[in-house]
Amino acid sequence: MNKHPVTVWPSGKVVEVSENESLYTQLKEAGFGIKSKCGGCASCGDCILVIKSGDENLNEPSFEEKQLLGNVFHLTKERLSCQTKVSGAITVDISMHADAPAKKAKAVRRSREEADKVLEDRRAEGVEKRKNKVHKLGGGKKPKAFSFHDEEEK
Ligand code: FES
Image 1 (spheres, helix red, strand yellow):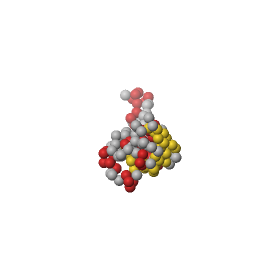
Image 2 (spheres, protein in one colour):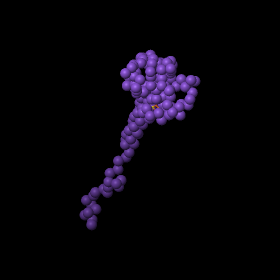
Image 3 (cartoon, helix red, strand yellow):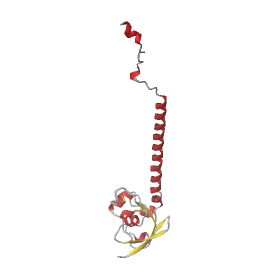
Image 4 (cartoon, protein in one colour):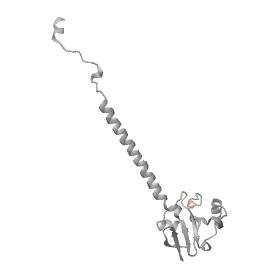
């Protein structure tokens, strides 16, 4: 099984990949974050990467890939990484995927902070309401004053 070097931009790291598996699978195994909704089935179109050099060392685009991206590789230099197999040295740019996990984590953190703030506000509001509430015992009725004279007269 032959291995071929893939230089991954923007980090500049070099990964050795085999001819038999897709670039998507091997880059994921190497720890690179590649967006995908379909998990490599050529239906979402999220796993796009840009081929910087070595496009002669790639397989021909599949029918599904051409349907998603069109037949304009010679202009865009974009391929679906889940449909791409490598047979020589190439350089790819995955900068469009690099910030995806960080953005997602930031969005999750922000929504948690907002939820915490709302909860804190509600708690503070509840404490204020409780402080201002007048507690009426006995259903709010004023008890009658007790006197011995009332009973003696009867
Ligand atoms: S992973 Fe969905 S199209 Fe490649």
